[in-house]
Length: 360
Image (cartoon, rainbow, N blue to C red):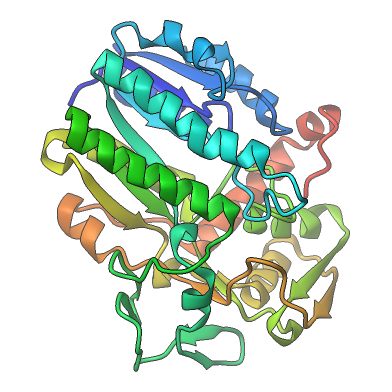
């Protein structure tokens, strides 16, 4: 596929802006448009980057189909990156925004693509997998982290990580449920209307231009606190900071998306787990050590043995299937990700402070 008109929903966000910029670079003759409601603080900082690269920006909201309709003319590729990304979203007693954005908004995007005859690449999440099942994965405890044990009773899990066969029965957070429901609708649109679709269930995505917060963007948050000062907490699992996530550099994700779009006709209708994998994973304790080494600073980290709602002990992606299908594998290491975050925060400190964004 060689797209001529590309729409990136959530296009001023961390992931969306990264993919919009890569689309513009990869397909210089294509018209690339970023669409975003600018609700998430810091997304406004990406507008200058998009403008400088020749990416058009439209201020709108996927919850409102009238905002999307004018963008369907001659559209042939939709990169659906819009989301309320916090796993804690809705637990304050009002789930309306996360449901309306992550599920109803997906329907509006699918309708736009169906009417335009455009292909859809949807960014989903590893959080579609149920919390209880993930926490039932047998683990070994080392000095710095939890590791997946060799013997498992659940399908879809091995020392390599979690693959697409992992069970889906159980609860997964309101955020995770909206993304899984969107996946189901995408499959139905593919079958009923011949809509060309691809889905990536991504692990933690990290890198420059991510505005880390307590409930989303943990690696950015960790680096920001070490750089700027403040405190952090090891929550849950005895407060030792041994819980593990893999991390996928935004540039590695962009590499994958370009590869998939180029081979869209071959990959059409498929879903893949995509993440950093075991080789690019860190526990919180290990993340602290990396941050201390890069910044030369130590901060106070308080242990809290109580596990937060919807939290999981470990998630590591098994990329076997996506690598076999596309030849793609992540190239950046965990240290690369953290070093790039540090360099970006230092280089853009005045810009972040002027915008009133206290890193972390």
